[in-house]
Length: 457
Ligand code: GLN
Image 1 (cartoon, rainbow, N blue to C red):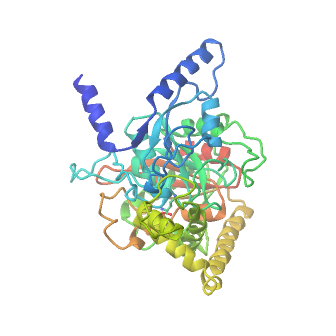
Image 2 (cartoon, rainbow, N blue to C red):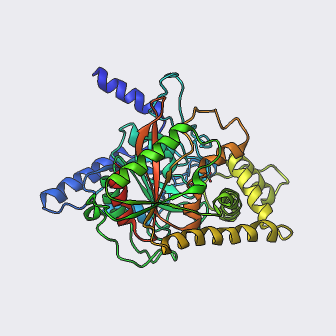
């Protein structure tokens, strides 16, 4: 009993689940049993999952961890979660995240931060962040509260929390998974993906999540390969690029070492390691932090107190304008307001050319950097997933927001280019915390990417 009491307490401490759907889980589990007995065993049959609160789940609280969506129960199911249920998976509940997926530490959530189950050797009592924005997903999988979880990644929100918690996270090619029914942050960057214990689980779960959906005009009409079958571990002759621009200033020695070890592992497995250049890398973060807020400011205009969730009370003599203003003032947190203001500013008539248009041009240059490298025969690119191990709750949030944004330095280029990326845990820091490497693949070649990651595991 003590073991279970401790496990329950630890589960509550992690603050990963913000809604439990136990009744539904038991029903789905019964249905999964019945399918198994009938000799029908789909890929995810009976697998208990946590679902990031960004996915619309029919009849179940869906708030994007924001007060503005308080009480919202969608009358529809997102395509990705629908596919998972069709494949036999079981929903345990909704997972904590940064509000509207804006953040890298889960600290912008209206539910308070999720906590990383890992602890620093020198400060075992300090609560660490699981990363973000899919922090609840990462904490739940790493803390054994579910077997796998869904995440979404706009600038790194699957890969960074995966790296901080020692799990595997995949950001598929833009268009591989339908965005229908996922609360929009930055529509040209958002992708859903699996967060799992290992590469094999990721391959199986991605296969269940992916596929064409006429409800999302950017969803690709391509067959979904058997990702699991691609895991042969044979990467002989694959060309792996090491981009020199990712050796950023101030990178800790242990991240350098991790990266070198990853190169050695791939070389030992028969891959050819080549130095490459992605010259526009240094402009990626500033371009991302113009484009993502611009799209967000437009997407978040719909939260007006009329259509969904929270509606502020108005006083006598006030009208709908005051209702809009007060609803948004009360409902959105500080980081979301900051993004809306930045977005509205860079899209405004006087600044559009100087910021938004410029950022879009930079985006094209970044994409071309990758196209050039792949045209030169590179199959995948190896980089660190994050510039550091997990940091303490409050450690970055209290500083200037730019410090938090720097977390995304290795991940945003992948979203800006629409490419697939994966974070795999490959080592531990001197403090005993997980560290991860990132592999970036060719568009639509997740099967090959997963197999290369499999060789790193
Ligand atoms: N940390 C990044 C941001 O705050 C990425 C978030 C994400 O991928 N959803 O925008």
